Amino acid sequence: MKNAGLLVMPAGFFLAVAAIVLFSSPAPRAIFVLSGLIVELIGLTVAVRAHLASRGEK
Amino acid sequence: MDPYAALPFPETAFALTLVLLLLAPLAIAGVALINTGLGRARSAAQSLLGSLVIVAVAVIVFALIGATFAYPPVGYLFQIAGKPWNWIGHGHFALSGLGAESVETQLGILFEFLAVAFAVIIAWGSGADRWRIAAGAAAAAILAAIVFPLLAYWVWGTGWLAQLGLNFALGQGFLDGGGASLVHVLGGLSALVVVWIAGPRKGKFPREGLSTAMPGHNAVYVLFGCLLALVGWLAWNMAGAILWLNITPTALPVIAIDTLLSAAGALAATFAITRIRFGKPDASLCANGWLAGLVTSSACASIATPVEALIAGIVAGIITPVFVELLELALSIDDPSGAISVHAVSGIWGLIAAGIFSSAPGQLIAQLVGIATLLGLILPLVYLLFWLLNRVLPFRVEADGERIGMDLHELGGGAYPEFVIHRDDSYR
Image (cartoon, rainbow over all chains, first blue to last red; front, side):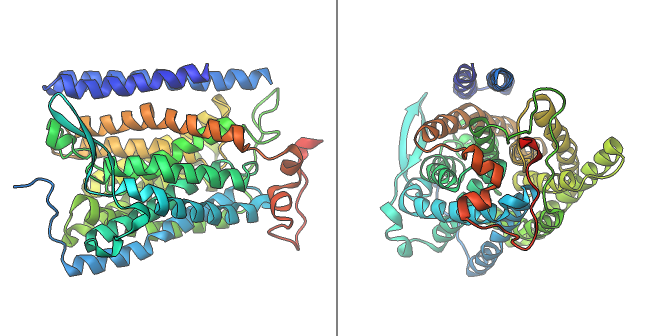
């Protein structure tokens, strides 16, 4: 699961980059860049939870 | 007018920047001392020797490989939506022809040498008492050869993050004069990966109950390291502002004041919080708060006003002890030096604060894109590289080495041979 979480994180990065390419007005750019960051935080949360779970199994 | 043309660099600015760069290594020395003091007595010599070794390896690898991609004003680019995306530089191999470059280029490369040394030393403290020197040096080599040069070109060179302002009207592009992103956030995220891969120290998280407290062995090292780091940080932020943000020397006193206020605000906040939380102020958490304020200043000292720098520091001083406790108690992450909270979290906060305090339209979005790059691209990349390295050269020392201490196991002698070092109670 840790690897799955880390694989999700680049998706957030590409979302943020796509936002600045596709939109020129500030509001949609900001919303999509924030969405990218939220996706990254979800991936990080999955990775951290996987770390917790693997520690509990030991 | 060519937007990429170099600005004139007067001799006075050259002399001043050179002197500042000669003082900047004190920040690295301070962090190395803090890392040693926060570790155990039986690993103190290994910690400081390891700091020297990984710095040495990092600068050699950066000279031979990394610098080729990090600084040059020209690079490889591709076009998306009609905009150039400079993604990697290509310069002379192994610094050949460096003497013929402009003085500004030479100073910039010297700054990058110091920055790569600083970035690699941050994770070393998080792997204290269990991370072998050989593996630490190999990890430093990877960061110096691949990850740091990429970020340095993107942020300090003519890479795509630096050009967000020109190409997409996002303020002045991603701003980070003091290296909060490619030194501190990179170092802090590397620390997280090291802790994930190496695992916690033996006995840190028992099967039942709370985590075991493993306090640092020398609070004096830690607190003196904070004072030493302040001197280095003042020089670091001012030199970075001259080199990467083209700030004139007349603006430097404000940057120094901002740096000091940020650290002071953070310390005051952490002191108050630990005093309220535990009944007495906690020395190691206060040291972490002070460092967090300095890290925050790396991003925003050259942008914020003194009051804004103070506010940024206070926020850093509040979030740092919260994250230290959260990571240890809720997430079972054993980070002896607190590098993840101090360098990664406070570095990210500093980058956000720089966006908030800047008056340029779109600057906050540029800063958020930079943060998204660090979290979404650099963290998985570092994890992949370190995971592969761990398969070849295991990070964690053998159980016996951890029991007798890293000094005896790796060096054959302790840091304090005339004193009795306590046995590890977790091995009863």
